[in-house]
Image (cartoon, rainbow, N blue to C red; front, side, top):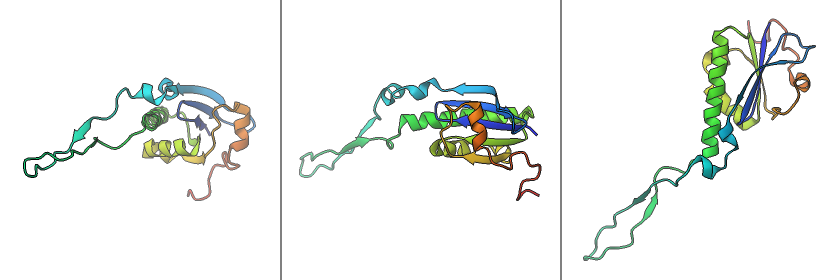
Length: 161
């Protein structure tokens, strides 16, 4: 049984392969997003466009004119994190099509885990065995074993008949 472990945050994702629990996972792929380290001002160079509401003319006088930004405020970091989550999900889908894993475990901070879950296609999500909501990107491969569920290598998981 081949288990793929993805340890990610909004700027990097490490793909590990694990065939036996007693061995440390082996790094097989790494994705990085250089833009994730930029400041908001570097990700987006301009403010949203402005819109001026036309006030009705009363007795020939122009009143105060309201103005506001178009669209809602959007955080460039969140947009970039969503793009990176989609990139990670596409990489998982490619690996699944190449039949490189039977089960999937994802380890990521809770907010990025949610973005990954949204971006993951149903075919990949069907093999998702566990989600660990922790930031473990900078942990050693040996340390990751401590976070794996006990039933990772049991053939039939409870609830899957």
